[in-house]
Image 1 (cartoon, rainbow over the protein chains, first blue to last red):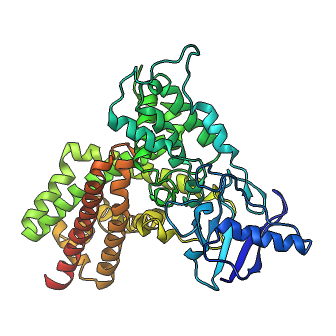
Image 2 (image 1 turned 60 degrees about the horizontal axis):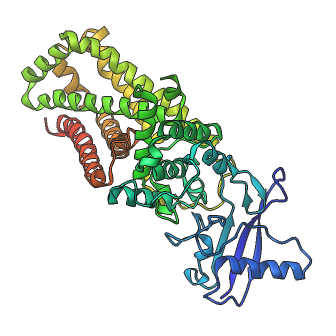
Amino acid sequence: MDFTLKIWRQEDANAQGSMKEYKVTDIDSDTSFLETLDVLNQQLVEKNEDVISFDNDCREGVCGTCSLYINGEAHGPKKLVTTCQLYMRSFKDGQTIYIEPFRAKSFPIVKDLVVDRSAFDRIQQSGGYTSFDTGGAVDANAILIPKEDAADAFDAAECIGCGACVATCKNSSAMLYVSAKVSQFAYLPQGRVEATERVMNMVNQMDAEGFGNCTNTGACEVECPKGISLENIARLNREFLKATLVPK
Amino acid sequence: MSRFLSSSIGRKVVMALTGFFLITFLIVHLGINLSLFWGPEAFNEASEFMATNGVIQVMQYVLAAGFIMHIILGVKLELQNRSSRGVKYAVNKPSENSSFSSRNMIVTGIIVLLFLILHLKDFFVELKFFDKGGFSTDYDLVTALFKNPVYTAIYVIAFILLGIHLSHGFQSAFQSTGANYNKYKRCLKNTGIAFSILIAVGFSAIALYFSFIN
């Protein structure tokens, strides 16, 4: 398969970026999207040109490192996959593919397609944890947790923190991410202990990072590679209302 | 409380609560207007009640405050949201993942606001300060206005846009206040759409009836 790739090139955080056109030819339809970029980069190396920088790590859809806004959609046209799980068979032979970085003021560009998502780390550090005493291993089922609650917590915990929600949202809101990180503990007894501080701190940090406000368009849920549900945002809203308005 | 109101979620909750309040107002307003179909006596009586009842008089100011909060906060949040992207995408396909109504709340909202100003001038100001605009009864003022097809067209377009605004706003308000559960999601969405159609069709029917039939 042959493709015309229009890729965002930007020297560094402060440089002016622009879309540059590249051609790749004779790509197997079962080549992954990132491998296609590898092929292109190999060509650039041979021509002694600057390679295209893009984030990637596990390449099996679990680490949340790969990003890319492909033809107007986060992680490309296929639903419930990350860019590394996207294959060229999802495109037409000869198609022009636009590749842009995840765009948000809170995700500044480092170089080309690489963005700095450490705003997510700072939100997580502000409250996305539970505290435990160290000591002997506690029996795994010492605390009973209803199946439904465990399942909801597990669904929320599927979030890999890739930032597709922010990239997709017309407001660059991080609500789906924060809601998943709050929800994964909200239903578990171990998570209730610090529930109030958690939701207050994480929402405050989210606002301080400059993400936009949620207007419930639901775009994040559709584009999320892990299918994190909007119900988590409703739960986050409840947790926040409880934390700020209900007296202790 | 101050932490609540200064947070993004708190502001969205205020948008939702004022939205719920304005939804209630629309239901009352449509109810009163539908009495137009029962003839001059019924409408003039309903109108008289609205103009003299003590509770309604007080609620007028609460309503105005609700409108102002909803509008100012809506514009403020929109400006904040616009600045949070930075560089725009060269190619973007929002229609793949969200509805037209949800993406254009500010557009439909501003047009409805412009309509509201015109509407207040047409009726509220005339009835309250200019002695029914020269007409002998409220019914005459209302029915005379819709004899002008341009006005009827403006009103019907505004009602359709209001319906589009509500079709997202209704369900969005439940989500913002945390009252949305997967179990009720479809029900809330459908109720919201049914309500939007009721409001758009209900108000339009009155304008069209007095423009073409009566």
